[in-house]
Image (cartoon, rainbow, N blue to C red; front, side, top):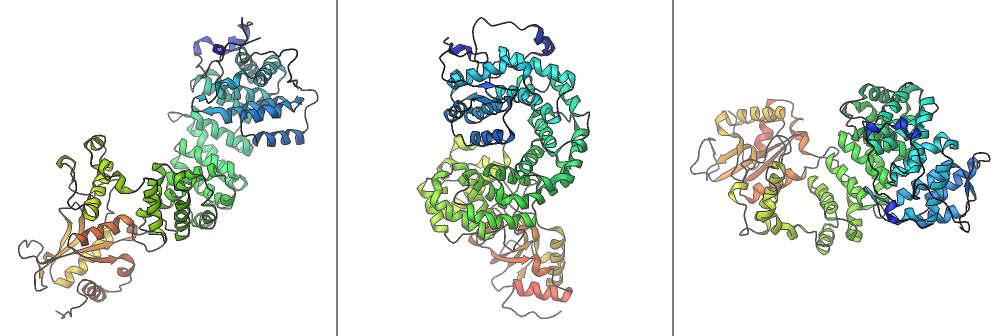
Length: 593
């Protein structure tokens, strides 16, 4: 029998709830034509295997099959494996369909829809359809989920039979928590979060408290909620109970479980679950060398989302990343750099390894990945030993900043930023750097894109001054000069930077009142650098503050840095005054008054 291609429906069509899933068992009828879910084999078909419930494969045989299945790199390899199996269990058949979905799924469609027309898939679907009443609960719900991942028509005979049989088992209360979660994910894919059957699944799941679930069940429920069941604050009490229990079992979680649970917390935006995040981070320390690239990427993304980093986790990363920088997936390398940049953690060993590997594999990275990696170097103000080679590699792959200057200054690009204040600030900062360093006489931004200050609430190109440190320095300056009028505070420059303190000197080196405008020979900018202006683990000034100070020097200011770690050591008023005098006027002698 030759099947028309039109019989293979792509996209798992949403079921309309008014049909009522419970009535499906009574409305079954044989189709006029065979679909991909109802298939028969020619008598002379080469493929001859059958599902069995009487003499199931041993656990070792199923495990070996799963391992071989995981090694398949294409659907053809899966089919070849199936041809070598004479008898298989329903869970093995479902696993084969899942593996095909893993290999063929691309967004909301299959890369190669004709894979559903193969005799192997037809035979599997035929066996599952005919034996639906004899399938185990695990095989039944797994097969149903696999069919949704292959985007089979929800109203095809196979899907209808699997759903109908699942409803019968659900009504009898025969399913474990893990099986309920698999069924829930399938129904979510078919009907969405308002599915009546899904509500029943959640009711069954909650009949036992999380403390009575196995670890695998706990992870399965998190995954179900992550997929979209938990919306508009629904099941909040269940989630809180799950968080409480999860904290007690994190020490038994595998790398995959840690990764999945952290990504679920991100998707559900469980900001109140910080004790669980911290506990998972501690467990992640043990698993750093064992995470897959995808798992590590998810873990790092979650830690950035919750704004958490653990000292021991950072140390484990410093030992592991340099050994893997050349072989990591490009997105994993990028996420590593994002993590260090976002958490303001400077690790020369990691940064040097990434910079060295970048030179050899620059072609592997997209423009966005290059930008995110370079941003981390810039944010932390770190120049790797091979900085020249790094920039040369960026040039070779056309990712050097100068390549994008004309685009940044283009009217079309700037129009796309309308209403996006933070992006406009970034653009202006790029343009200011370009104007000062590269093209002093080059293009300039149009007046409507000018901003008065880089220091704004939220995302800012400057780090706000530490209030306590700022007040202490102001008091010391008043004692040094004898009056508050001799220095300006939080002075906005014509170049949009804000000076913590500004001093004005005449030609003879005398300090002028802050209100003085004429005869100003020199301007001194005091940068009162609190702890937040440095990396968290070493005393390295952040990149934006280094750029600010460099810009100010190029614009004619004398920059004097007052770092917190020097100022906080001063024991009394006299030492503060002496320190400030030595910092501001290192070559002059101060008379006491």
